[in-house]
Length: 431
Image 1 (spheres, rainbow, N blue to C red):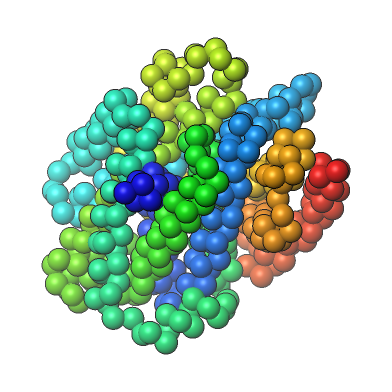
Image 2 (cartoon, one colour):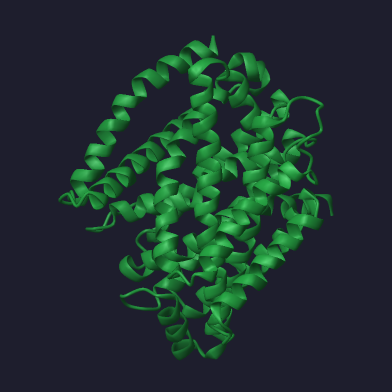
Protein backbone atom coordinates (compact mmCIF):
# COMPACT_ATOMS: atom_id res chain seq x y z
CA UNK A 1 0.00 0.00 0.00
CA UNK A 2 2.85 2.38 0.82
CA UNK A 3 4.44 1.77 -2.57
CA UNK A 4 1.11 2.20 -4.36
CA UNK A 5 0.59 5.53 -2.59
CA UNK A 6 4.10 6.58 -3.65
CA UNK A 7 3.27 5.81 -7.29
CA UNK A 8 -0.04 7.69 -7.05
CA UNK A 9 1.71 10.64 -5.39
CA UNK A 10 4.40 10.96 -8.05
CA UNK A 11 1.86 10.43 -10.85
CA UNK A 12 1.29 14.17 -10.52
CA UNK A 13 4.41 14.53 -12.72
CA UNK A 14 2.94 12.25 -15.39
CA UNK A 15 -0.35 14.14 -15.08
CA UNK A 16 1.50 17.36 -15.77
CA UNK A 17 3.42 16.29 -18.87
CA UNK A 18 0.66 14.19 -20.46
CA UNK A 19 -1.55 17.09 -21.35
CA UNK A 20 -3.22 18.18 -24.59
CA UNK A 21 0.24 19.21 -25.83
CA UNK A 22 1.48 15.64 -25.57
CA UNK A 23 -1.69 14.33 -27.21
CA UNK A 24 -1.31 16.82 -30.07
CA UNK A 25 2.43 16.33 -30.61
CA UNK A 26 2.55 12.56 -30.16
CA UNK A 27 -0.61 11.82 -32.14
CA UNK A 28 0.43 14.11 -35.01
CA UNK A 29 3.84 12.35 -35.02
CA UNK A 30 2.05 9.05 -35.53
CA UNK A 31 -0.11 10.57 -38.24
CA UNK A 32 2.86 11.96 -40.18
CA UNK A 33 5.59 9.38 -39.59
CA UNK A 34 3.93 6.22 -38.32
CA UNK A 35 5.87 4.41 -35.58
CA UNK A 36 9.33 5.68 -36.60
CA UNK A 37 9.56 8.37 -33.87
CA UNK A 38 8.77 6.17 -30.87
CA UNK A 39 12.49 6.28 -29.98
CA UNK A 40 12.19 10.02 -29.33
CA UNK A 41 9.56 9.34 -26.66
CA UNK A 42 11.81 6.68 -25.13
CA UNK A 43 14.64 9.23 -24.93
CA UNK A 44 12.35 11.94 -23.58
CA UNK A 45 11.05 9.58 -20.87
CA UNK A 46 14.61 8.84 -19.75
CA UNK A 47 15.43 12.56 -19.89
CA UNK A 48 12.37 13.39 -17.83
CA UNK A 49 13.32 10.81 -15.19
CA UNK A 50 16.92 12.07 -15.00
CA UNK A 51 15.91 15.70 -14.53
CA UNK A 52 12.98 15.02 -12.19
CA UNK A 53 15.11 12.82 -9.94
CA UNK A 54 17.78 15.53 -9.81
CA UNK A 55 15.30 18.30 -8.92
CA UNK A 56 13.65 16.21 -6.19
CA UNK A 57 17.07 15.15 -4.86
CA UNK A 58 17.93 18.82 -4.42
CA UNK A 59 15.01 19.19 -1.99
CA UNK A 60 15.84 16.04 0.01
CA UNK A 61 19.62 16.52 0.28
CA UNK A 62 19.86 20.31 0.66
CA UNK A 63 16.52 20.88 2.46
CA UNK A 64 15.76 23.50 -0.18
CA UNK A 65 13.44 23.32 -3.13
CA UNK A 66 14.94 23.96 -6.55
CA UNK A 67 13.51 27.49 -6.47
CA UNK A 68 15.05 28.16 -3.03
CA UNK A 69 18.41 26.73 -4.14
CA UNK A 70 18.44 29.00 -7.21
CA UNK A 71 17.54 31.98 -5.02
CA UNK A 72 20.39 31.20 -2.63
CA UNK A 73 23.05 30.48 -5.23
CA UNK A 74 22.24 33.39 -7.55
CA UNK A 75 21.04 36.02 -5.07
CA UNK A 76 22.36 39.55 -4.74
CA UNK A 77 22.92 42.37 -7.18
CA UNK A 78 21.62 42.81 -10.68
CA UNK A 79 22.39 39.19 -11.60
CA UNK A 80 20.33 37.91 -8.69
CA UNK A 81 17.33 40.01 -9.65
CA UNK A 82 17.69 38.99 -13.28
CA UNK A 83 17.70 35.31 -12.33
CA UNK A 84 14.64 35.81 -10.10
CA UNK A 85 12.75 37.55 -12.89
CA UNK A 86 13.75 34.92 -15.47
CA UNK A 87 12.80 31.97 -13.26
CA UNK A 88 9.56 33.43 -11.93
CA UNK A 89 8.58 34.85 -15.31
CA UNK A 90 9.47 31.62 -17.08
CA UNK A 91 7.47 29.43 -14.74
CA UNK A 92 4.42 31.63 -14.23
CA UNK A 93 4.21 32.63 -17.91
CA UNK A 94 4.92 29.06 -18.94
CA UNK A 95 2.22 27.72 -16.65
CA UNK A 96 -0.24 30.34 -17.90
CA UNK A 97 0.51 29.44 -21.53
CA UNK A 98 0.13 25.74 -20.77
CA UNK A 99 -3.05 26.40 -18.84
CA UNK A 100 -4.73 27.87 -21.88
CA UNK A 101 -3.92 24.70 -23.84
CA UNK A 102 -4.92 22.49 -20.91
CA UNK A 103 -8.39 24.01 -20.56
CA UNK A 104 -8.95 24.12 -24.32
CA UNK A 105 -7.80 20.52 -24.71
CA UNK A 106 -10.02 19.32 -21.91
CA UNK A 107 -12.99 21.17 -23.42
CA UNK A 108 -12.19 19.68 -26.85
CA UNK A 109 -12.25 16.18 -25.33
CA UNK A 110 -15.56 16.83 -23.61
CA UNK A 111 -17.13 18.30 -26.76
CA UNK A 112 -16.30 15.18 -28.75
CA UNK A 113 -19.01 13.45 -26.70
CA UNK A 114 -21.10 16.22 -25.14
CA UNK A 115 -22.84 18.81 -27.30
CA UNK A 116 -22.60 21.67 -24.82
CA UNK A 117 -21.23 25.16 -25.58
CA UNK A 118 -17.47 25.50 -25.17
CA UNK A 119 -17.81 28.50 -22.84
CA UNK A 120 -20.07 26.55 -20.47
CA UNK A 121 -17.72 23.54 -20.42
CA UNK A 122 -14.80 25.89 -19.79
CA UNK A 123 -16.47 27.28 -16.68
CA UNK A 124 -17.34 23.79 -15.42
CA UNK A 125 -13.83 22.40 -15.96
CA UNK A 126 -12.11 25.51 -14.61
CA UNK A 127 -14.43 25.55 -11.59
CA UNK A 128 -13.75 21.88 -10.83
CA UNK A 129 -9.98 22.47 -11.01
CA UNK A 130 -10.35 25.49 -8.73
CA UNK A 131 -12.35 23.54 -6.14
CA UNK A 132 -9.74 20.77 -6.07
CA UNK A 133 -6.92 23.28 -5.61
CA UNK A 134 -8.79 25.32 -2.99
CA UNK A 135 -9.90 22.51 -0.69
CA UNK A 136 -7.29 19.78 -1.36
CA UNK A 137 -3.86 19.46 0.20
CA UNK A 138 -0.90 18.89 -2.11
CA UNK A 139 -0.88 15.16 -1.27
CA UNK A 140 -4.63 14.81 -1.88
CA UNK A 141 -4.36 16.64 -5.22
CA UNK A 142 -1.39 14.49 -6.27
CA UNK A 143 -3.14 11.21 -5.45
CA UNK A 144 -6.36 12.32 -7.12
CA UNK A 145 -4.44 13.13 -10.26
CA UNK A 146 -2.76 9.72 -10.03
CA UNK A 147 -6.18 8.10 -10.35
CA UNK A 148 -7.01 10.34 -13.34
CA UNK A 149 -3.71 9.35 -14.99
CA UNK A 150 -4.61 5.68 -14.50
CA UNK A 151 -7.97 6.30 -16.21
CA UNK A 152 -6.28 8.19 -19.04
CA UNK A 153 -3.72 5.40 -19.47
CA UNK A 154 -6.40 2.73 -19.72
CA UNK A 155 -8.24 4.74 -22.40
CA UNK A 156 -5.21 5.34 -24.62
CA UNK A 157 -3.60 1.92 -24.11
CA UNK A 158 -6.83 0.07 -24.89
CA UNK A 159 -7.29 2.10 -28.06
CA UNK A 160 -3.67 1.58 -29.15
CA UNK A 161 -3.92 -2.19 -28.60
CA UNK A 162 -7.12 -2.44 -30.64
CA UNK A 163 -5.42 -0.69 -33.57
CA UNK A 164 -3.13 -3.75 -33.69
CA UNK A 165 0.14 -2.06 -34.66
CA UNK A 166 2.98 -4.13 -36.09
CA UNK A 167 5.09 -5.66 -33.30
CA UNK A 168 8.19 -5.43 -35.48
CA UNK A 169 7.35 -1.79 -36.22
CA UNK A 170 6.95 -1.05 -32.51
CA UNK A 171 10.33 -2.58 -31.66
CA UNK A 172 12.13 -0.89 -34.54
CA UNK A 173 10.52 2.50 -33.91
CA UNK A 174 11.34 2.36 -30.18
CA UNK A 175 14.93 1.13 -30.29
CA UNK A 176 16.27 2.16 -33.72
CA UNK A 177 16.56 5.97 -34.01
CA UNK A 178 15.52 7.33 -37.38
CA UNK A 179 14.97 10.84 -38.75
CA UNK A 180 12.55 10.73 -41.69
CA UNK A 181 12.72 13.86 -43.88
CA UNK A 182 10.94 16.75 -42.15
CA UNK A 183 10.90 15.12 -38.71
CA UNK A 184 13.80 16.85 -36.89
CA UNK A 185 11.80 19.64 -35.27
CA UNK A 186 9.00 17.24 -34.39
CA UNK A 187 11.54 15.05 -32.55
CA UNK A 188 12.59 18.08 -30.51
CA UNK A 189 8.92 18.80 -29.87
CA UNK A 190 8.35 15.29 -28.54
CA UNK A 191 11.22 15.81 -26.10
CA UNK A 192 9.98 19.27 -25.14
CA UNK A 193 6.44 18.10 -24.45
CA UNK A 194 7.70 15.47 -21.98
CA UNK A 195 10.43 17.43 -20.19
CA UNK A 196 8.36 20.35 -18.89
CA UNK A 197 10.09 23.25 -17.05
CA UNK A 198 7.48 23.83 -14.37
CA UNK A 199 7.44 20.10 -13.55
CA UNK A 200 11.01 20.37 -12.24
CA UNK A 201 9.95 23.00 -9.72
CA UNK A 202 6.78 21.09 -8.86
CA UNK A 203 8.65 17.83 -8.24
CA UNK A 204 11.20 19.57 -6.05
CA UNK A 205 8.51 21.47 -4.18
CA UNK A 206 6.56 18.36 -3.12
CA UNK A 207 9.52 16.06 -2.36
CA UNK A 208 10.08 17.21 1.24
CA UNK A 209 9.86 14.52 3.90
CA UNK A 210 10.66 11.58 1.63
CA UNK A 211 13.70 9.36 1.52
CA UNK A 212 15.77 9.01 -1.64
CA UNK A 213 14.66 5.38 -1.96
CA UNK A 214 10.95 6.25 -1.76
CA UNK A 215 11.43 9.12 -4.17
CA UNK A 216 13.27 7.08 -6.79
CA UNK A 217 10.81 4.17 -6.69
CA UNK A 218 7.62 6.22 -6.95
CA UNK A 219 9.02 8.68 -9.48
CA UNK A 220 10.52 5.97 -11.71
CA UNK A 221 7.31 3.96 -11.94
CA UNK A 222 5.13 7.04 -12.49
CA UNK A 223 7.32 8.50 -15.25
CA UNK A 224 7.81 5.16 -17.03
CA UNK A 225 4.03 4.63 -17.03
CA UNK A 226 3.64 8.17 -18.35
CA UNK A 227 6.12 7.43 -21.13
CA UNK A 228 4.21 4.29 -22.11
CA UNK A 229 0.98 6.30 -22.26
CA UNK A 230 2.68 8.87 -24.52
CA UNK A 231 3.82 6.06 -26.82
CA UNK A 232 0.28 4.70 -26.89
CA UNK A 233 -0.95 8.14 -27.97
CA UNK A 234 1.53 8.14 -30.86
CA UNK A 235 0.27 4.69 -31.90
CA UNK A 236 -3.31 5.98 -31.79
CA UNK A 237 -2.25 8.81 -34.11
CA UNK A 238 -1.27 6.33 -36.81
CA UNK A 239 -4.97 5.59 -37.32
CA UNK A 240 -5.55 8.64 -39.54
CA UNK A 241 -3.95 10.40 -42.48
CA UNK A 242 -3.21 14.12 -42.63
CA UNK A 243 -4.48 16.68 -41.76
CA UNK A 244 -4.41 15.95 -38.03
CA UNK A 245 -7.30 17.05 -35.81
CA UNK A 246 -9.06 15.84 -32.68
CA UNK A 247 -12.38 15.43 -34.47
CA UNK A 248 -10.77 13.64 -37.42
CA UNK A 249 -8.94 11.22 -35.13
CA UNK A 250 -12.00 10.51 -33.01
CA UNK A 251 -14.14 9.94 -36.11
CA UNK A 252 -11.61 7.63 -37.75
CA UNK A 253 -11.23 5.57 -34.57
CA UNK A 254 -15.00 5.22 -34.35
CA UNK A 255 -15.21 4.13 -37.99
CA UNK A 256 -12.39 1.57 -37.72
CA UNK A 257 -12.94 0.14 -34.26
CA UNK A 258 -16.47 1.13 -33.25
CA UNK A 259 -18.02 4.00 -31.35
CA UNK A 260 -16.30 2.98 -28.09
CA UNK A 261 -12.87 3.89 -29.55
CA UNK A 262 -13.94 7.47 -30.24
CA UNK A 263 -15.37 7.64 -26.73
CA UNK A 264 -12.15 6.30 -25.21
CA UNK A 265 -10.11 8.89 -27.09
CA UNK A 266 -12.44 11.67 -25.95
CA UNK A 267 -12.20 10.57 -22.30
CA UNK A 268 -8.42 10.30 -22.56
CA UNK A 269 -8.11 13.78 -24.08
CA UNK A 270 -10.42 15.21 -21.41
CA UNK A 271 -8.44 13.52 -18.61
CA UNK A 272 -5.14 14.75 -20.07
CA UNK A 273 -6.41 18.31 -20.18
CA UNK A 274 -8.06 18.30 -16.75
CA UNK A 275 -5.14 16.72 -14.91
CA UNK A 276 -2.73 19.23 -16.44
CA UNK A 277 -5.19 22.06 -15.73
CA UNK A 278 -4.68 21.28 -12.02
CA UNK A 279 -0.92 20.76 -12.08
CA UNK A 280 0.03 23.94 -13.98
CA UNK A 281 -1.48 26.35 -11.40
CA UNK A 282 -0.14 24.16 -8.57
CA UNK A 283 3.39 24.28 -10.03
CA UNK A 284 3.26 28.07 -10.41
CA UNK A 285 2.24 28.49 -6.76
CA UNK A 286 4.87 26.04 -5.49
CA UNK A 287 7.59 27.86 -7.48
CA UNK A 288 6.53 31.31 -6.26
CA UNK A 289 6.54 30.04 -2.67
CA UNK A 290 10.07 28.69 -3.08
CA UNK A 291 11.32 31.99 -4.48
CA UNK A 292 9.68 34.35 -2.01
CA UNK A 293 9.10 32.50 1.25
CA UNK A 294 11.72 33.12 3.90
CA UNK A 295 12.36 30.58 6.64
CA UNK A 296 9.57 30.38 9.17
CA UNK A 297 7.52 33.40 8.06
CA UNK A 298 4.47 31.22 7.24
CA UNK A 299 3.15 33.68 4.66
CA UNK A 300 3.18 31.21 1.76
CA UNK A 301 1.44 28.15 3.20
CA UNK A 302 -1.05 26.27 1.00
CA UNK A 303 -4.08 28.19 2.27
CA UNK A 304 -2.50 31.66 2.31
CA UNK A 305 -3.88 34.37 0.03
CA UNK A 306 -0.45 34.78 -1.65
CA UNK A 307 -0.22 31.11 -2.60
CA UNK A 308 -3.85 31.02 -3.77
CA UNK A 309 -3.50 34.21 -5.82
CA UNK A 310 -0.72 32.65 -7.89
CA UNK A 311 -2.59 29.48 -8.81
CA UNK A 312 -5.83 31.41 -9.27
CA UNK A 313 -4.16 33.80 -11.74
CA UNK A 314 -2.86 30.90 -13.83
CA UNK A 315 -6.23 29.10 -13.67
CA UNK A 316 -8.13 32.24 -14.75
CA UNK A 317 -5.82 32.62 -17.75
CA UNK A 318 -6.94 29.24 -19.05
CA UNK A 319 -10.60 29.98 -18.32
CA UNK A 320 -10.45 33.30 -20.23
CA UNK A 321 -8.88 31.67 -23.29
CA UNK A 322 -11.47 28.90 -23.16
CA UNK A 323 -14.35 31.37 -22.83
CA UNK A 324 -13.05 33.27 -25.87
CA UNK A 325 -13.39 30.01 -27.85
CA UNK A 326 -9.80 30.08 -29.08
CA UNK A 327 -8.97 27.17 -31.39
CA UNK A 328 -7.28 24.52 -29.21
CA UNK A 329 -4.58 23.07 -31.49
CA UNK A 330 -2.88 26.41 -32.42
CA UNK A 331 -2.95 27.48 -28.75
CA UNK A 332 -1.44 24.16 -27.67
CA UNK A 333 1.31 24.41 -30.31
CA UNK A 334 2.11 27.96 -29.13
CA UNK A 335 2.46 26.70 -25.55
CA UNK A 336 4.82 23.98 -26.78
CA UNK A 337 6.95 26.61 -28.53
CA UNK A 338 7.14 28.68 -25.32
CA UNK A 339 8.17 25.53 -23.45
CA UNK A 340 11.03 25.04 -25.88
CA UNK A 341 12.28 28.56 -25.16
CA UNK A 342 12.01 28.30 -21.35
CA UNK A 343 13.30 24.75 -20.84
CA UNK A 344 17.02 25.48 -21.50
CA UNK A 345 17.15 28.10 -18.74
CA UNK A 346 15.66 25.75 -16.16
CA UNK A 347 17.79 22.78 -17.29
CA UNK A 348 21.01 24.78 -16.99
CA UNK A 349 20.06 26.10 -13.53
CA UNK A 350 19.30 22.55 -12.36
CA UNK A 351 22.59 21.27 -13.83
CA UNK A 352 24.56 23.90 -11.91
CA UNK A 353 22.69 23.26 -8.64
CA UNK A 354 23.23 19.47 -8.59
CA UNK A 355 26.93 20.01 -9.32
CA UNK A 356 27.33 22.55 -6.50
CA UNK A 357 29.31 20.94 -3.67
CA UNK A 358 28.40 23.72 -1.24
CA UNK A 359 24.67 23.08 -1.67
CA UNK A 360 24.59 19.32 -2.27
CA UNK A 361 27.59 18.08 -0.28
CA UNK A 362 29.33 14.86 -1.22
CA UNK A 363 26.21 12.68 -0.85
CA UNK A 364 23.92 14.61 -3.16
CA UNK A 365 26.45 15.77 -5.76
CA UNK A 366 25.84 14.39 -9.24
CA UNK A 367 27.81 11.24 -10.06
CA UNK A 368 29.52 10.65 -13.45
CA UNK A 369 26.73 8.62 -15.11
CA UNK A 370 23.90 11.02 -14.12
CA UNK A 371 26.14 13.87 -15.26
CA UNK A 372 26.63 12.29 -18.68
CA UNK A 373 22.88 11.79 -19.02
CA UNK A 374 22.22 15.36 -17.94
CA UNK A 375 24.81 16.68 -20.42
CA UNK A 376 22.86 14.98 -23.23
CA UNK A 377 19.53 16.27 -21.94
CA UNK A 378 20.76 19.84 -21.38
CA UNK A 379 22.35 19.89 -24.86
CA UNK A 380 19.09 18.76 -26.46
CA UNK A 381 17.03 21.28 -24.49
CA UNK A 382 19.31 24.17 -25.50
CA UNK A 383 19.15 23.05 -29.14
CA UNK A 384 15.36 22.85 -28.84
CA UNK A 385 15.18 26.32 -27.30
CA UNK A 386 17.38 27.95 -29.94
CA UNK A 387 15.43 26.28 -32.75
CA UNK A 388 12.05 27.33 -31.35
CA UNK A 389 13.23 30.90 -30.67
CA UNK A 390 14.60 31.22 -34.21
CA UNK A 391 11.36 29.91 -35.67
CA UNK A 392 9.30 32.36 -33.62
CA UNK A 393 11.58 35.30 -34.57
CA UNK A 394 11.51 34.63 -38.31
CA UNK A 395 7.74 34.13 -38.24
CA UNK A 396 7.09 37.30 -36.21
CA UNK A 397 9.16 39.54 -38.52
CA UNK A 398 8.18 37.89 -41.79
CA UNK A 399 11.71 36.70 -42.52
CA UNK A 400 12.40 33.76 -44.85
CA UNK A 401 12.10 30.50 -42.95
CA UNK A 402 15.28 28.46 -42.57
CA UNK A 403 15.27 24.90 -43.81
CA UNK A 404 14.83 22.31 -41.10
CA UNK A 405 18.35 20.88 -41.48
CA UNK A 406 19.96 24.35 -41.43
CA UNK A 407 17.95 25.35 -38.37
CA UNK A 408 18.91 22.24 -36.41
CA UNK A 409 22.60 22.54 -37.36
CA UNK A 410 22.69 26.23 -36.43
CA UNK A 411 21.00 25.48 -33.10
CA UNK A 412 23.51 22.71 -32.38
CA UNK A 413 26.38 25.12 -33.12
CA UNK A 414 25.00 27.66 -30.64
CA UNK A 415 24.65 24.87 -28.07
CA UNK A 416 28.30 23.87 -28.53
CA UNK A 417 29.40 27.48 -28.02
CA UNK A 418 27.34 27.84 -24.84
CA UNK A 419 28.74 24.57 -23.46
CA UNK A 420 32.21 26.01 -22.80
CA UNK A 421 31.27 28.62 -20.13
CA UNK A 422 28.72 26.26 -18.55
CA UNK A 423 31.30 23.47 -18.16
CA UNK A 424 33.87 25.89 -16.72
CA UNK A 425 31.39 27.11 -14.10
CA UNK A 426 30.44 23.51 -13.31
CA UNK A 427 34.06 22.53 -12.65
CA UNK A 428 34.44 25.49 -10.30
CA UNK A 429 31.25 24.62 -8.38
CA UNK A 430 32.31 20.97 -7.89
CA UNK A 431 35.61 21.84 -6.19
